[in-house]
Image 1 (cartoon, rainbow, N blue to C red):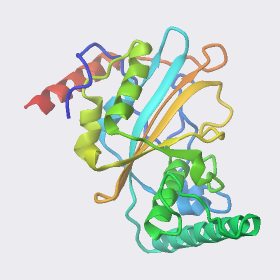
Image 2 (cartoon, rainbow, N blue to C red):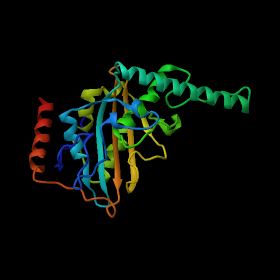
Image 3 (cartoon, helix red, strand yellow):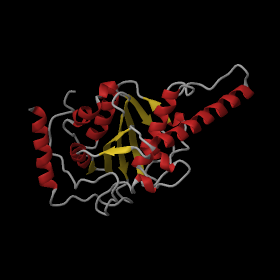
Image 4 (tube, one colour):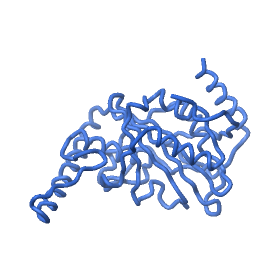
Amino acid sequence: MGDVGDTQSVHLISPQHPHQQPTTQQEGRKTTSSHQRHGRFGELARMKFVELRTFDLVNQALIFEASDCRVVGGAELYTTKAAGLDKKLYKQLDQHLTSRYHDDAALCTSLSPDSRPGTSPFGPLDQTANRRAFAYMIATLNAANPDHDFSSLRPDDFSRERSLKETMNRFNSTLQSMGRIIPRLWDVIDTQLDLRDCDIYAYQGDESPWGDEPLIWSQIYFFFNKKRKRVCYVHLRGLSRITSPKLGGGEEEADEDEEYAEFLEDMEV
């Protein structure tokens, strides 16, 4: 993977695990552990979070003050591998999606005998692999935002990205327009995911994953590598400077800048 851009100073804040409560000085999403979720399919969202210090460093750089808004972003890695109870729960979700598909098919038939449900961004939902991919997107959103239940989302709340390059350029352009360049952002993600082997989906639903935040704009992408059984949830959003808490820095910024710079040097070795 090539470099994202020329190196410039980035101010980093204290690392935050996706399942820790944010402080008043550090903007982030309110989270609890995934097993505390409630709702019809809350327990189905038990995607295993893969904690990596390299991702923490990138995530620190994705939270900053821009000229006209506060920017909060992140890259979070989850594994789709399931065992024991998780397999049973995913089977229940697959059965739910299968039932939903047949309901849609029956409705189409009632309206027009020759019609059938159209394809989805994941492909025809009468195929198990496509339903499973859709389920992983729901499970990722649930695991990353455990105060919300996304089990009611439909396939058309997502779109399939046409190319990796276009997706990366769109994300980079947004960062650059906010005055931020993060060196080797995509290289860091690529080491864990093999981006060229990923199916990429964008979330475009009406329901915000962050509840009632003063949201101005957002970008949400899912990089799904079937072979490696991993999903990377990459998100970026702009919040109103008037109604959202000020993003704090702290005395650790210089040390974290240096740590990120050392990490980039290690990648060159």
